[in-house]
Image (cartoon, rainbow, N blue to C red; front, side, top):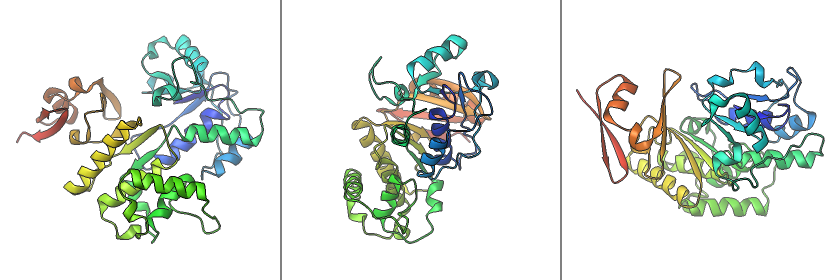
Length: 319
């Protein structure tokens, strides 16, 4: 759940932006509210207009006051500012450990400094655009099912450039600018797939296509990347390169939120594991405490065995 003051600008934009990114996930729900919101109020006109540039329709958004939500049931609450965080904790002290500022959660800024997303309410459209871009830089999503949405023949370069526009390609009426091209080239080079730039994305292997989608999410330089089942359907080579990419991302300071059924995907740099069972929080522990034979067997309701070596984990089924 995203929280701001009136739920007509910042939290609303973050809510609908992330919801669009993960729309294919059935077990993830996104909400937003305002501490002083007048429930039923629409989003501001400027917020609606700016979100259109990201392919997000906020015309039907209506503000919700925090007191009218089920915030106690949320797994994670992300606030626009430090003051919002303190107000939420004052109102719901039992939520300690679940409440952060958005920038704090993704590792932007320093304690007590640069931790707020500025309120654009009452400001000009450029301020709204800056706010939206700031939110977007905190979010990036790669999903295995996103790959199924690529059903047209496009050069890899254009697919990645589409990440700057919130699309899976470059609209016909849009002309790619030099700054954007440089960002795409730099991202492809970082991921070791610059040689694929001119390839038709439909001709790539599953592993190559998955890395292209990671590039698409990475091109706008988000501080946190959401990887949703990133190795599903890949052969061992594809799994190797995706997992190596995750390690490369952590080395340059990117935060990763990984959604997976496979302990093998959990790279050594990941320290915290949250387990969901039947739509409810099952465990939230340090990796070493969560990835045990007893805990994983109870999670899946079948006898399983966890093996670990040098920070890596693997799953063995007991028949």
